[in-house]
Amino acid sequence: MSAAAFIAVSPTARAATARRASGARIWAEDGVTRLDFDMGGGAVILGHAFGPVEAAVAAAASNAEANARAALIDLVPCAEAVRFAAEEAQALPAAIAAARVVTGRERALVWQPNGALLADAADIAALVLDPLGMAPADLQAARRLADNAGAVLIFDEGVSSFRVHDRGAQGLSGVLPDLAVYGAGLANGRPLGAIAGARHLIAALDDDDLPVARAASLAAAAATLAHLAVQPAAPDLRILGAELQAEVAAIVDRAAAGRFFALEGDPALPTPLFAAPQLEGQWLRETARRDLIVFGPHGLSAAHGEAEVARLVEAYGEILPLMVASGLLESLLRRPVPPAFDIVTPFQYGNS
Image (tube, rainbow, N blue to C red; front, side, top):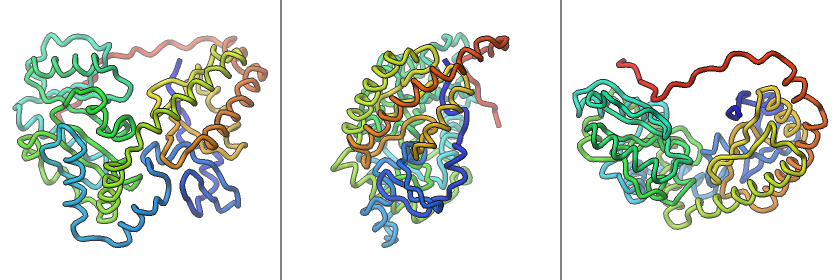
């Protein structure tokens, strides 16, 4: 079954410009109020326009970066030191570059639990993985592989961050990377990148790889992390996500929709999977008609509660039987099957 989110933005969401957002809702210029289950790709973990975060941004404290750094060091088990960047996309390449400097090697590999064992691991600078949904045993295997190879283990926690556990995926699994990279989830959706980890690796970062972070984002990060330190969002998100997955699984069974749909992944970020992109397109159109912003993984936040999840479950209960009755799956099955793509792991980053 294919991964979700072939269509990055639903037609309705693209056409209706947001006028105001609060909590889990967006008020658009077309006059419609929509319930948001995207939440900036899951980065808006506390909800839109969260009061303490907005107040911190308005105050624009001069010590926001220091506060954000201290808060991240307190929350992240591997963090001896922290550096920030303007965008999440800048953090991972900078971390890999630091690993190359420290190890004197070039190759950086993206590791998957089912990836092949590396016969020529001696020239690997960094082993990179996204820990979201990985079992602790898989992360332990990656840790051993990196240690045996003398490579730097990097967790890309841009998605998992403090959604899966109050101390991130490393807190959930007990496996510590050498470096961990983070993104907008630190700042409740505002653009930001961060690298946390061993002091000697952080010292090896090149300033030219780390454009200066925006003051508003650093202020938002300091406030977001301070709130999460005393009131973690992860426990409630995991409970809500597990409830959602269980309810939807029952609907899938009743509708006999399991041939083309499943709601899988970590409970903190349940991900709809479709057998074909055309089916996902049908799903997106139907959710948009119900004034739901749903494309890709369901980015539950602290602003979502039982009522909001019940509305999404209700939509599933209407849409999945409709999709079965539409016959789209059968028409797709009658078409010639295109050649499958070969997926080769691990992926190797270039040297540039």
